[in-house]
Length: 170
Image (cartoon, rainbow, N blue to C red; front, side, top):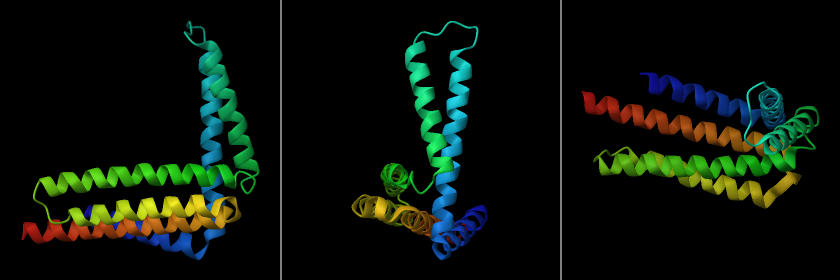
């Protein structure tokens, strides 16, 4: 039941991202920027805490880079689109690896729903290549579409998995 609900929510969010790709792309970039800002501030606070720090220089460097990148992306999301497209592509590659591993585990367990995870993995990898080929020209629109497509496919995979599990339980 929860797989169906989560799958349906992902599909709805994916459709919204596809209908409003610029909004979805800019929102994703701004959110990512704020995550980096928080990471940078927390890193600086940690570096300047009273406890001894083994690698103060590297910690400060990492925190300052995260803070600067976060500020650029959060306040100039279209300018940060090029970097964000690369980050999204990397995320899609890693998400695809995770989906592949889940699919292989399901196949080893003799479960028929393994195919859904493999389809999701291949789609992630194709979207990652698309992101890198189109580069910054697609910017926020590309990110919005990629996020939308990935959410829809992830939702469909969960619906398929939930349906298969429900049929097995009957």
